[in-house]
Image (cartoon, rainbow, N blue to C red; front, side):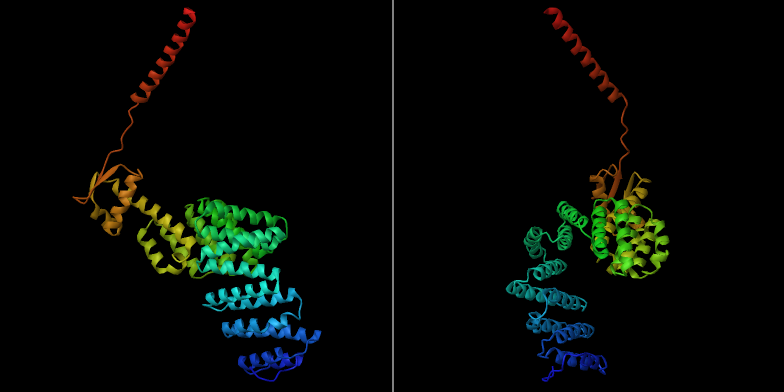
Length: 422
């Protein structure tokens, strides 16, 4: 950083824009921020310089410099309105978030800002930074710390009745409980978010996030038709805003189609006008899953999971449902194979289905316990013995009904004889 300052004027900002390279532009903007003038025009120019400097540092992936900039600007924040301070702070934190691999830096930066806002008694800004910190902790799988932070924050925000922030916090709490597999609390938090959202105007991006979370929770309860509707609403919101989350909404829409045995619709959705905008690895992965499901091919299914590991297995929502789909597909294939036999070697079934023997044996034992078919495993001989389906003899229920009727007659005769005796 240069030792001499530059006057905070439009000419200085123009000089930075005309610089030959980003390093020179960054140096000029730092010098503009060193201008001791606190006139209204100088402050306005400095705000613009901060915006330009933030963009340049983000483009150069200089996360630590952005963190230092936020510390350096603290005296400047005392000269401008609190609302503008909040806007600048959140803008710099957002810029750091756009730099890859800065999760730890973002958490450290938010913690520093929480301490500063507490000391400066800037409640409005602190609550928003704490909400951002809780989201970062959740992404970093520090669930317990995130939940503790949210629990105290939500009480405070409810007391102040800041509904816009309350929607964000309730939605975040729903996501956090879902990550912890606590579905009742996740649904309760989402209901609270919807209730708060109904009382105010909610920006389309936030409404899209609510719909996306609603779809995820309905899909978790196997209500895929309702989930599809919510994912479609989320997709329309994100698509209109050209938000990257649109592709995830579309991906989950395709997942719902596959889960309700409508895999043939997947190709049509992808080739639609809206779908063609997002053609890429995520949609290719879902198309491959749909093809494997249509062909009832476990081998194709496993090849797809291997080829699209990032898009399928590393997405926890898709992975959970595809695991269920894989199990269903495996059971259907095994049932189709074993219905031809009364006694068959497990190795032969494994060969026919092209899966490891131990995997097939484990699945067959689970299916027997779940009463998917009647049979037993002879592990000594390495065979599966299939029993004939026991046929219920109609004489037994008829006999029980006759005995029941006789009992009613005897009871009636007893009541009548009791009346005669009296």
